[in-house]
Image (cartoon, rainbow, N blue to C red; front, side):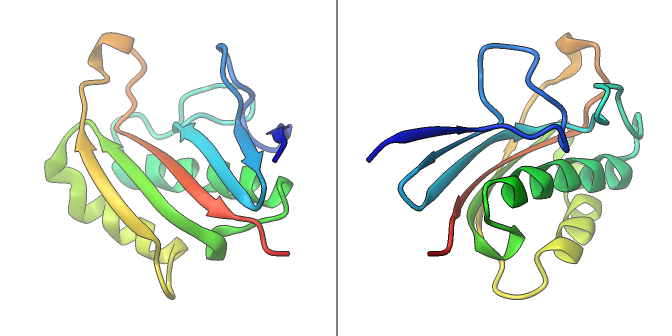
Length: 130
């Protein structure tokens, strides 16, 4: 199987040595998405709901560019600055994954050293339907 790099200008472009997503066969590995707009500006500083929504919109745009979609996500990993915000993040997440949600893991992280006001990051593995 051949590795294919997925890139779209409908989601913020990487600012480092990584790809938005990589496809191998019918699997798609989407890099962690953070709460920034297309220009790379932070969204919803300190507001987990706004940040989660922006992250999932960025993720959705990459999935669609690869010929997939939220309904084809197999697993996500959610990184949270404050695990106490889990219920509020989860409420927004549930709006995007209404039926047959993917497997999921959650990890508490410290984004504070990045000075970016991120509260959440989400990465995903999806399939691309044939």
